[in-house]
Length: 60
Image (tube, rainbow, N blue to C red; front, side, top):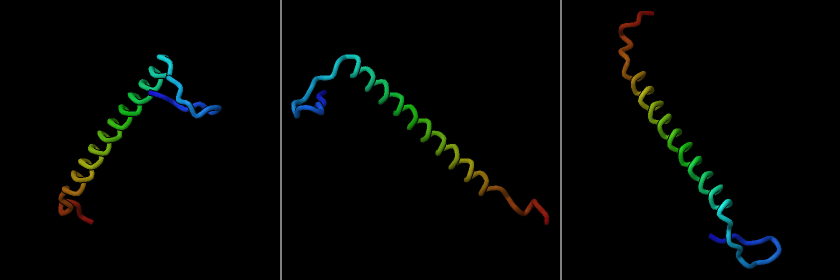
C-alpha cells in the first residue's frame, strides 16, 4: 500500500508498523460495526415484541 508524502507527489511505502496499525484500526472498526448491527437487530426484535403485546389486557 502506498501513501503520498506532503512534500512530494511520489508514493511512499508504509512501514510494517504503519500497516499493522491500520490493520488493527480496520479490525476494531469492523468489530464496532458488527456490534452496532447486532444491537440494531436486537432493538428491532424488541420493538416488534412490544408491538405484538395484546393491549386488551390492560384496562384504563
